[in-house]
Image (cartoon, rainbow, N blue to C red):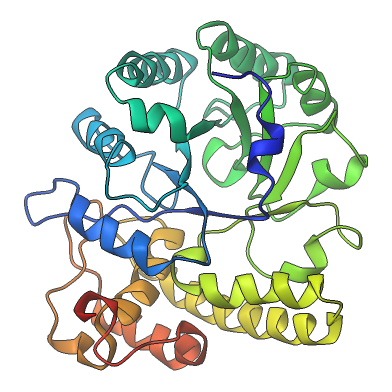
Length: 330
């Protein structure tokens, strides 16, 4: 596998795909494939086992099921994948990295699609940048895969500083930096980190985040699970020179997402990113018949509440491009 894949991840929209579950708690691969195909042609690149896909909670068996999915012949042609390696300690990150790599030789399609792995700082309340750097460098030493450095202080309780990313970026295997903090301090600190692709994971202000007005090359957005079409349209309008049109659509998406995510804060069983997007995806999947459809299940096995789905319908229906009975019935 090439160690310099920065040019292979140039499309500005990445999506951390939801993980869907059966009533037994297993990964529902058929449902995930149906969801992934519903995002074509707007989404070309996805992350499996990201935070939105419950990556922190997935057990080894569920993670293996996502490896199987990544190797599936049923994924869209030309699929590009990142895998989240979201574990709280350095040792656990290394163990999951080694497991993924151990399976690649028997998963040739996944091996050809895999662009890298996403790794967070350790889950510990620290401002010790030497400790954070050691965590990543240990993972680098135990793996041959390219790495996306993932800033997620909402979970890790620590912040990776600009100088730390600059040091890590000297390694050509660091291909991407994703920041979901909403602060954007690392991206705004300097204009370049040795060619690392900079993507924003925080929601809202989509157009303003992009270069040249903002510091980012693109987005890695949970809302791409349901709002891929309007997000792609923002990119297209902006590229065509219609900045006003792009700004209006960006603002409309931001307003809707803010309300849906606020409603999701009251929902348990998974993180708000997963719950909000599961609600919007459920509307796209089942359309007008969503109230009679079997409930969507969260990572803890509990059903997604109809109240949250109803809130998503109120605030985001105009953006979801719901087709009749939904994409599950096409």
